[in-house]
Length: 315
Image (cartoon, rainbow, N blue to C red; front, side):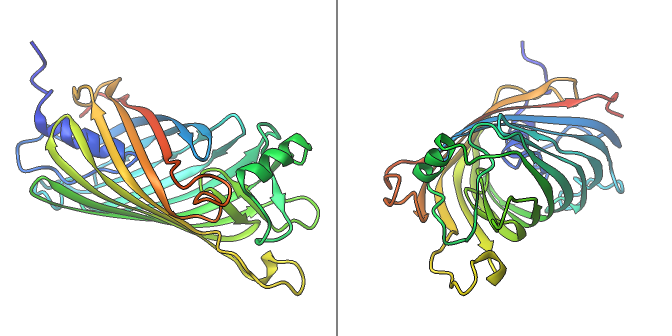
């Protein structure tokens, strides 16, 4: 017989947590397990990605404490989180402190600072002298074959507000990210290719990204819906060669299926909420992935496995 904690509500809520990369969601209408006042929590997500190709392990770990006691749906999921958020791939590492403040169940604000380091492997890092330069898969494969990739390091600062609402079995969520990058590029290069953002990122400058989700919660333990994603690098004349004008658009948009299946939810335990996550999307706009270099019919594909660990006693 299954544990009594494996109920519809925790499983649905767990799927939302995993889909949101661990940003909490409002409690559903039915009774939910009591929230601990303090937590030492680890969230782990291993993702494999195609178009662009990638493999990454993300681990969010730290101390979390409720800001105030309240059982109303709008207020219940409140907390302050302080920790680290390392991201490791075969090409490099991003690691640094992160602070999250969630005053209401519907709003979360994340502030983070990361060291960004590339090992000089897997064709990374590759940089270009201008935002107009070719950063297609073919060009980067040619660059890798020619030994144009190199080790490099820098920093990333990010401000990420997150809002969400639920009406019946439908949830709507939006995560926005404003990121500042400062990378040590070689020579006179001004921009570089980042696989996560899948664009030429300013060596020193800003990028914007946004994910909008509409999810159906009526089929627990499955959550299924759609995700619209947008990435926009912000270039200035310093990201172009002297006398050059920006003649291309390196921003992109895609939309498609987003789903998660949570195998079980046993509360605040050392290994909990194992889940598989799937995102299949097609590019609405992309300089290279809508026919110029990659066939428009080729989707963006992300497959992930996630779990959560609570290392305190759950009180």
